[in-house]
Length: 151
Image (tube, rainbow, N blue to C red):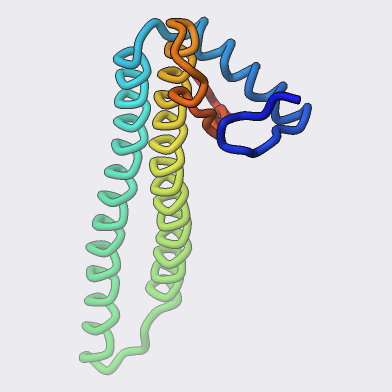
């Protein structure tokens, strides 16, 4: 039986998945530079979404300050904080939670994409080495997996 140089035997399912990824890599990319370019584009898209979420959090913080100032002005005049002010604060809380969740998702997505494309580069190099006749030890298998929205 043949074993990968790492000494780890791949299951039939893992081997099928690796062959699928290998076909994807070989048909989608002609060089490591191609993979790196797609990686940078995809990471840039996610980074822009992260920036948008961070800007939204800053805007929500400014809005919160304005609403809290309204509440403080009412209290300084001896008046109760109105229902509309309380509702506005609750709405800001809800919106902030949603934006923070989206921000966290995008930060995780950014890290995962970087790992996926790094694995693609390593596997692509291994496949190129195999094609050029280098020994399998020089082209160790990687655990590359396709992102859910692989380009």
